[in-house]
Length: 315
Image (tube, rainbow, N blue to C red; front, side):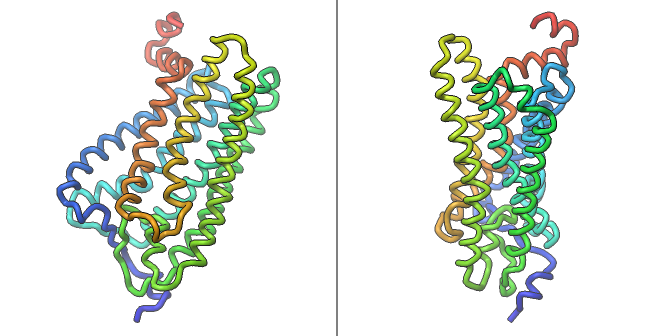
């Protein structure tokens, strides 16, 4: 019998992914490859536009830059490995690669939960306290809020990654997923995992549900403020800026709550794979589109950067 020590030093894992559907793998490779390229282009564009355009040097676009960087990091932590596994018969990933995937997946996911809450607070201040917006959302506070989000996300990953990786697996190497994700690794354990699943649930409440409650409360105040605005154009402007953020929140939390707010063995594993794929590639792909298609400021900034003076004259 292989003990926990030998388990923790094994050289590689096998990512089963979609290998039970070989006819689907080639289609998935093409679709995911195109989506990944578009994700890289879209999020890089958002970062460059937000950093280079002088009209977008505001707290909202400072946070949006971090969100785009998160999305880039998130997809890059797992999609290249998935494309490699889909392209041939080799489904392996090194132990170190698996550990890095798990750490990044947990850490970046936690950061995004908190960053979306920070962005909700930014919209709350912009709508409910517009005259004091630039005073309240000063550069020092913005940097502090982003630092807390990154710090808490990394701390959550540092707490959960080692515990998950060091669960006794009795020689099992096959991960029934396309990445080293926590629920899939917990299912591989050959010991009772009720205690760790309970810990995961408690941490999920803290880092997933608490920010969501904060977001909902913030938007409750925003809705109340909007209802008091007489101008139709004023309401429309608020709906445009807040609508983009709410759409991103809905996409993100809809998937994350389903995956992590229930015991590891209770959900359909196939369903979990496709939800994780959606969360890992579709959401980061849609985020830049949501913020550009609904946002005149970003579209104007793109025109200025691409057309120079001609773009500025059209404003």
